[in-house]
Image (cartoon, rainbow, N blue to C red; front, side):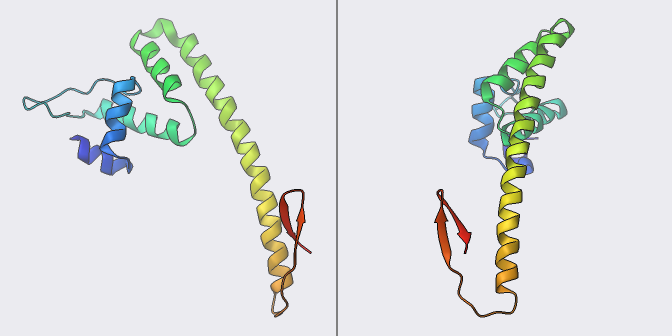
Length: 135
């Protein structure tokens, strides 16, 4: 598969893939006789992994370190596991923060729905600690 097909598959730019390769977040991609990248299944799996990690906020450096250790073989299991555990903890923290934000927004939307339910009254906003709430 060529770089254009891979970029379309994951909805990322070809520049992003090139950048990830240059930073070591995906392996060096083999090239054909014309110098074009030819992605094998294993390369596509690394692009998918990196894309998912980036969407979750994992740094390029962390992904590159993981790949570097991966290339060194089974004796790096512990170090790789630590990287993944640290990233998992950070994602769990983000999920907790997002859950709290979701609950707050959901509550506000529900309050708007209850106030607006069939009524033609105007809503009055009150500023409270840098947030706007229905009054």
